[in-house]
Image 1: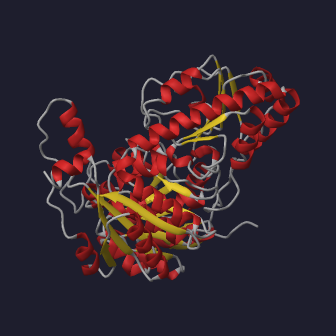
Image 2: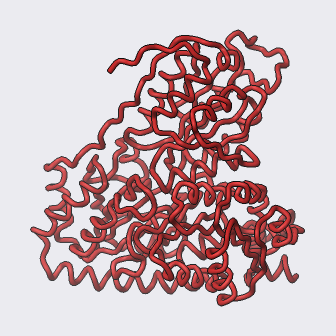
Image 3: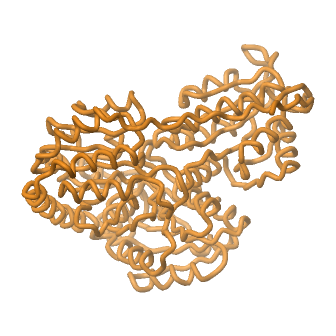
Amino acid sequence: MRMEPMTITGGAHLARALKAEGIARVFGIPGTHNLEIFAQLSAHGIDIVSPRHEQGAGYMADGAARVTGEVQVIVTTTGPAALNALTALLQSFTDSVPVLLITPGMPLTHPGRGNGLLHEVRNQSAALSAVLTEVMRVTSPGEVSLAVGQTLSAMRSGRTRPAAIEIPLDLIETEGPGRLHPSVTRALPGPVTEQIDTAAEAIAASQRPLIIAGAGALGAGAAGASCGAGEETTALAETLGAGIVLSSNAKGLVDDRAETAIGAIGVLELLPELTGDADTVIAIGTELAPSDFWPEPLPLPETVVRIDIDEVQMLTNATVTHPILADARAATAALNVRVTAMRAKSATAAARDWTADWKSRAASAGESDGRPWAELTDALTTFGDSAETPLIIGADSTMACYYGVQTGWKARPGDRFLYPAGAGTLGYGLPAGIGAKLASPQARVVAVEGDGGSMFTIAELAAAVQAGVRMTLIIVDNGGYGEIRNEMEDRGDTPSGVKLTGPDFPALARAMGARGVHVDGRDALLEALNEAEAGEGPTLIHMTEDSRAGADMLRG
């Protein structure tokens, strides 16, 4: 039914459109130029989560979007606030996460060279466009609803990406006519029979098949939901006897304990040897990006089957012999049906032996690299196994996460590992965990950060207290920026600028209204995790790291 136009303010058009699109929560900070937006959001019953910094708002929205697969919204004011959020949007862009920024911009008649207006950025849209491909600046109050419909149509179709809508500040409180324009979502492409058949024929006789799966195989839906291609990926691996390598953000797609699961080993030095030894690679929903699979280059065999919904990404980071432009779940299931009909049992048996050997080698390498964080990862595995509810880990770009948790924590199907792989930003774990818990309240949420990175967004602990979020933040302390310190030493440099004087983290947590404890050892950590889950609000757990960097910066 055609909606009659309404003559209301630009802010009211925005709130009305968001409400109609099912947006129930926004993350944002009110400012002089967006007061009408916040007034209308409240009037329309949209919940407002108040972070302490716009970057924190972006990470919260990112975490919520990763566990739900749904568009999450942040609202900032002009200039510095929008630019503060841009780092978080860069992280969302590089990891294909649907976060929508809504921000005021300079007035329609603002002089091109500027005149010193508050929060002035001469071309804010251009700054946003340097990171985002979908940026829309509206030109009338009524166009706001159209912008919401068009932008969400783009964000909800195909490969998900963040986007921005800029509303000139003089239009936010100006009344004008406008209609609702509901978003239109394009269905994901289904598998083409001919592509499936030719790919199946190419891999049916493989002796050393390897599956590499990324977050694109997870699908959209809350943590714990079986909406991705996890079961289909596992079934294909069992049919082939293939090993499964995961990107960091694909942890939880399959059971880490499965015979076919080699793991999220993108940081291990043996990875290129593994991919080079394979005679077939099936890449499912992964960019095959250097930020996910560190040792470069990543050698691939002559036969590469790739399942993706992005035709441009299909051609990136690999020479693909069998492209399948289709939804990961449907295509993987169809491929398995055809391979099952062709696969010889002897080939599967040989592949299983090959996979078992590499699984053992990868486990040994991961154990060696992750030794300083073995107690952390063992405690997280035990904690995860102690209840059926999914465990979501909000990770940071820190050694405890990529050398420790990523390879050492045994995730179950439905668990999630939220890791800032693409941009590699610091301070992501805590706010992402807050957003994930708000969006998936039935899940248990633990954030893991280093002492250096945690200080980027530690203020969001106060936001977690205010929102009543029950989650745990583990700070693994090595006395500073440990990875950078090691890189300096490996170059032959004298480490400088990396040793930090940190606060009393448990006391800092208590000062913000959270619980704060220090623990030593695996058993004490596990006990603290269980106490935090049984309590109310957020808990900070501080522990020190027995590592090369810690030996120098904590005890040197």
